[in-house]
Length: 102
Image (cartoon, rainbow, N blue to C red; front, side, top):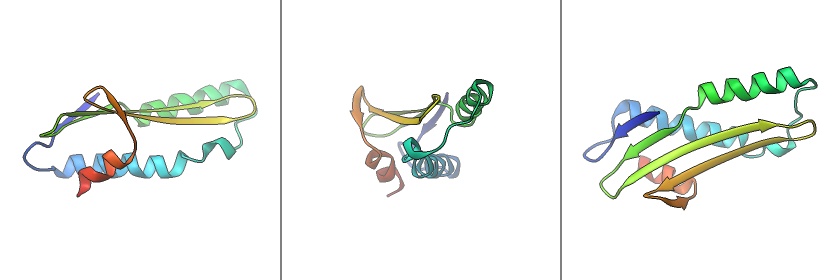
C-alpha cells in the first residue's frame, strides 16, 4: 500500500497518484457494459493485471486519513468495477478524491 502525507502540501507524486485514480475511475465506472474475456484464464489474468496496477492507496490529510481501494472482477457475462473510499472509517464517494486536487 502506498501512503502519501499531504498535510502541508500535495507532492508531485501524490498528484500523479490522484490523477491516476481519477483516470482509472473514469475508464472503468461503466464497466458493467464491457464484454468479459471468453475463457476463465484470461478473465483471471485481467483481474490480476488490474489489481497489480491499482494497489491500495492512503492519503494523510489535515482532516484525517483517506484510504482508496479499487476492485475489478469479470464473470462469464459481466465485468464489475468498484471503488471504495474511506475517510476516517466513513464511506465517501469520488468527490473526496477530486477535492484533494483543489
